[in-house]
Amino acid sequence: MKFKNNNISIELNIHGEKEYTKVSYPAKYGIFSKLETSDHVFEFNLNHEIKHAKSKNSTWRNPSEWLKRSIGNDWIYYSTGGYSGVFEAIGEYYLPNLMYQTNSLIGGKPFTEEPIDYIVKKWHQTLLQLPSREIPENFWPWLKSIQQQTPEKLQKKAEKLFNITGSRVSVMPPDARHVDYNIIPLNISDGCLYKCRFCKIKNHKKFMVRSQQNIDNQIEQLKQVFNNDIINFNALFIGEHDALNAPEDLILETIQKAYHSLNLKISYMTGSYLFIFGSVDSFLNSSKTFFTRLNQLNFQTFINIGLESYDQATLDLIGKPITKEMVGQAFKRIQDINKSCTNIEITCNFVMDDSLPDSHYEALMTLIRKSTSKNNPKGCIYLSPLKFGTPSREVLYDFYKLKAKSRFPTFLYIIQRL
Ligand code: SF4
Image 1 (cartoon, rainbow, N blue to C red):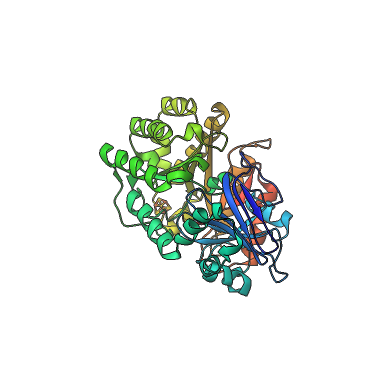
Image 2 (image 1 turned 90 degrees about the vertical axis):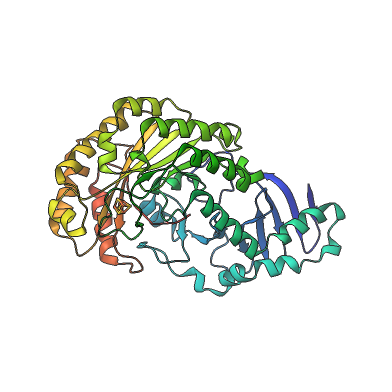
């Protein structure tokens, strides 16, 4: 359904791209509706909630950049930052600029710019001021509905989502970039094993597995909260910080249950994706059979393991209670699984900081360069700057040096919440 006059145009239920791809233009995924005024473009999901926005004025940074509102109700500004630089650094053509402090080494401060700030603060007011008399009556119910999704209501809905899973996802796996971070969160456990000193996203919860009843309730409530827009999702995040430490049967059964109950099979988006965090212990303790069974599911699965360093002095310095030997053993097993399981990619994180000893970088080189003689297309290495809110040219320079030598796809990990 479409309408257009000199001031305004509306198009309902646009069928966008079905497959997540890495392209240097703003691809629009899923089914959505668009409202265009002389100054702005707004897009809405199938629950009539605002999803994307941009200004058409010449003061807007770049016509192919835009704002996205996450299901956690954060605004994120997607900037090109000069395509090649961004792609090299994060593996995507667009850089998510966040409203809160994170460990990103690149990007500016777009939210301080007036046209961006205007949309973040006034988008709803703009919708309320639309000249409805100019719009045909058959569009009024939709118009009324998008106006009813106020910033307050959207915030409450985000909080409802956090309550369902028991907490906000404080960090998404880096691999969630493959689905533009459009994930359905489902917690099968809380907390983590190590409580590392360096970690800024940990909570104080002791590692605990959720009950079957709790998981089932989450799935039922998630269905309600995602409602009509669930058809636009094809990715599941099984949380929290070390879901791989949960019993294997519980992990596999939950994945299958969620796949069927959340109707991922009939998603508008092609394929199904699964993201999980694991620790060195949970990964080394997982059986071979588990990976074989996981590989047979309907998902492309990404498991992200925090290795952090292959240098004992660094592990001790950052307060990660594991040994260099365990890291080496895990890295080797990661390669074996990545080779043998076509539907699973295990990725790993290492820390970066100018305060770390040279031995950290030398040891890292042993793993990402010397351990193999050929380049590997699979098994991303994510480098995660330790400090938040202090982009450093030196650390960025170190990243590019490591990336150039690495025999694995190597990118920066930007800590991003849901
Ligand atoms: S790095 Fe992982 S294991 Fe360590 S405290 Fe943070 S969440 Fe827990």
